[in-house]
Amino acid sequence: MKLFCNTTLDATQSLVQAAGNNNLATVPTLFFEDILPVEIVFLGEGGGLAPFSGQAGHEIKIAIGNLSTREILTQSTLDEDGKAVLDLSTNALGIEMYETEQKSLTFEIQISYTNQKTETLCQVPCTVQNQLIGDLILPNPPLSVFAQSFEIPNTPTNVAAQNMDSQTTFLSTDVGRQFIALQTVTPRGMIQDEIYTITQVINTNHAKFDTQTGSGALHIAHRGLFFEFV
Image: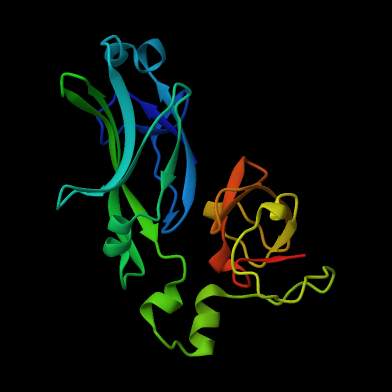
């Protein structure tokens, strides 16, 4: 997920479309349990951070939280290239998402200094959606309701998908393995019927793959729902 932050604007308006385009942008839909690579591009005076980074001992964090309770649900520190990995599978976020189809939360970028001073660079709404809505909302959902909610397509006849086996975790040997998108999932960069290749196994639940616009993430629980090995 690549975002643009114009630090010359108010924090509630600083998430913009792109360099040279200060129209307000929104955070794409996020998915609970994802491990999400994030890149923040700062725009404005001196590359956007000149007014802030002159002080020694500073760090920039991204976080998702509940603004009404002031609780941070997950956070990560940006590296020198403005990149971080945001863990959307924390216990705090799990409690927040329990029995909820989706949750409106707050995405924030904050710079802090060793003297405890902090400045908020960006503070905008975001939506976090449960991975398996049917399982979390309806303990025993009727098949017709579950299928209609996700519009699960039939496996394309021109692709030989493997039979479902007992694999319930990603393995290191899955790097280089191909899979087919069973439906279009825009926030993940997946297009129905397209074939993708796993480029990295992050852990037993998560893997990365290349998309037309960058990289995407898979959750093993979505096998048979969003994707299937070929």
